[in-house]
Structure formats: C-alpha cells, structure tokens
Length: 77
Image (cartoon, rainbow, N blue to C red; front, side):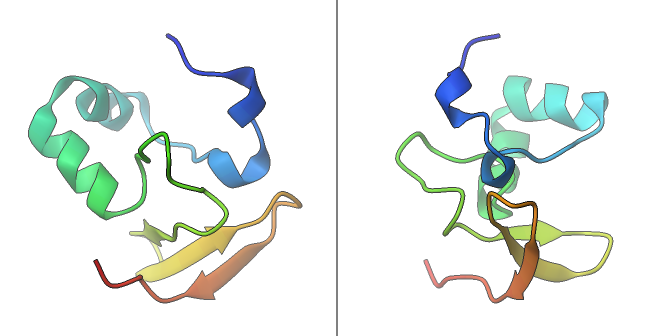
C-alpha cells in the first residue's frame, strides 16, 4: 500500500468506497478528477488547508484534526 503513518490524522483521512478508491489509484482520469475535488492530495498539499468536495451535500469542506468539518469555498487554482 505505501504511505506514511505520520499522515494518519483526521484531516488527512476521507472514506471512499473500494471501487472509487481503486479507480483513483489505477486510472489517470479518475485520479485527476479526485485531485480536482480534493479527494487525492499531492505530497506537498496540506489536508488541513485543502478543501474537499462532498458530493452528498454539494459543499466544499475542510476537516481539522478534532474531526470538525467546516464548510468553505474552493480555492481558485
């Protein structure tokens, strides 16, 4: 699998179904979509300041390390 246990903190964890997670890891188009939605971050991106899109609510959110979700807006690219 890979990764770092140092990154295992609430702000850096999103739960996805296994099918979507598999596609994000195996398909470049899906990976690009996941990056645009904040579901897949680059190693230099900070999960505490990078919003993610919640398709269920239609909102952009940030999660802190106390498991709080804060509605925000998407940062301009």
